[in-house]
Image 1 (spheres, rainbow, N blue to C red):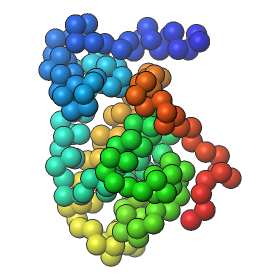
Image 2 (tube, rainbow, N blue to C red; image 1 turned 60 degrees about the vertical axis):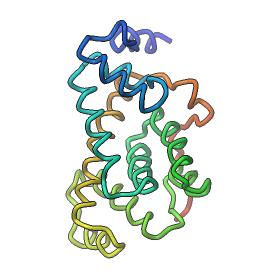
Image 3 (cartoon, rainbow, N blue to C red; image 1 turned 120 degrees about the horizontal axis):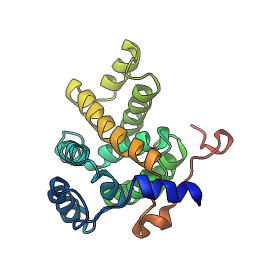
Image 4 (cartoon, rainbow, N blue to C red; image 1 turned 45 degrees about the horizontal axis):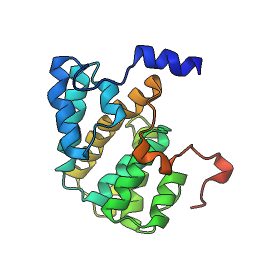
Length: 198
């Protein structure tokens, strides 16, 4: 409880009428995108520059050559690897909306293997980039290409990881409370023994 109070003092949930003026237009954009302002954007609003950069890159990745399901595979993989208890529930909902199956969403929430080989290769490429801080081998990069992806899409994955660094790290230091709309998808990273077998 003390930690929650400390985080609330340092990282308040700002609304359009309490946020810095430079953040208001970005909060309005979040509201237009989601039908409400998620708590992570309310936290980010304390830094208009952060919120602006996050929103701009989020919109950019949405227009990438990766389809909606592939974008969620990348986001969910990053959320899992970075242990973001806030983002996994929200992206579980977005993954459902993209048409990913319940089985594959469970796999993404559990660090498991996806049923579609190409999507699985995308998730593995994402995981390797995170685990190796971008320093993957030529063999690992070639496996991504062999799955049917392009150099452009490799760079688009990096864009998504920049988006997730902002949101995952923000939520980590701020202890962002999960919005009511996503609480039914509550998530905690499973112990290694509980992860789904590949």
